[in-house]
Structure formats: C-alpha cells, structure tokens
Image (cartoon, rainbow, N blue to C red; front, side):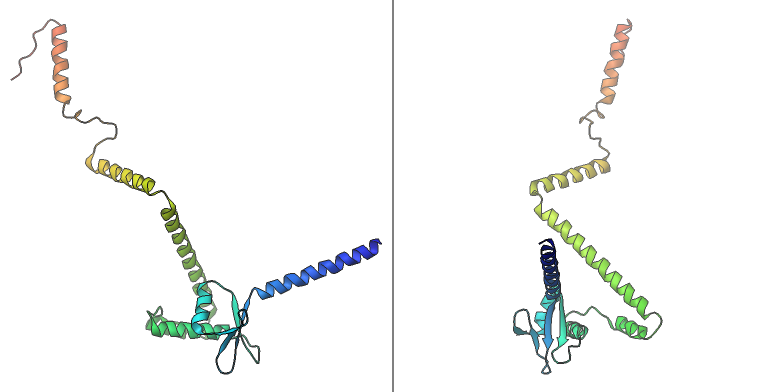
Length: 200
C-alpha cells in the first residue's frame, strides 16, 4: 500500500511540474508572422497591426514574434520596424550623428561594449522615470492642506533667513533697546542718590 501511495505522489508531482512548465511558456505571448506580412496574435486569435504590437511593448507584455512557417524568431525585426516608423512619423530620438556613430560601431571591438553600455543606460533611465512617477503620485495622494502648510513654512523660513529676523525675537525689541537701556540707567542713578540725567 505504501509503494502504491508513493507512486501516486510521484505521478502527481510530475503532473504539477508539467503544468508549471506549460504556465511558464504560456506567459510569453506568441505572435505569428505570415508570408503576406500579416501578424496573428495567438492569445486573442486575431490579426493585429504594428500599432498593436507597439501597445504590447508599452504595456510591458512579454511576447515573441515567430515566422509561421519556419518558426524563426522575428521579434527584433518587428521591433526595428516599429522604431523605424516612429522615427519617420514622429519626433525622432536618434539624431543623424548618433545613427552614424552606431553604424561605425558595427563589426568593431567596441560593439559588445556599446551594447552593454546602451542597455545599462536605458535601465538607469527607466529606473529614474519610475522614481519620478512614484514621487509625483505621492505628491498627488498627499493632503493638499498639509502640502500647502509645508510650502508656507519653507517660504517663511527663507524670508526670515533673507531679512535677518530671528524666529523667537518679538517685534520691536531691537528698536526699543536704547529706550529700555536709558530707563534702566535712570533707575540705577536714582537708587544711588544721584540726579537723573536730563534728556534733550
């Protein structure tokens, strides 16, 4: 009985492993490219356009474009087509000089280094964009009155620093310093039996 139970457990484990593999593979969206240049999205069982593929890229959906007949991976080719259309139809990212420098890097000893440099630069840029979006979201989610209060306090501190006014100094103390000093002097003279000085 124990051997039969162990056998069932092993079969169940193998089944779970196979199912996990199927799920992992299915996470990558497969798009087939036919000889007539049409793209077929197997996830939705429908033909799509380059604009639809671009939307998948923007949304962060993992996909792979394969030739419907040879099964060759055409993902890079499709992505280059999207970049070409964006560069020609909209505001270009790659200047003429930058494209020329990239072309000069092909086949040289620095090609792999350039690839690594560009990938790391884009990863850093994406991280900076993510951090900026989080800061913007935190600002929008914060209590507006709290934010206005903090801004007002910073502005007041800057004004005090520029004008030389101390935070705990009561108004008029500086201007009344001489008068207060004179009164104290007269009081001390009277206490000593002397005549107070005459003010002009």
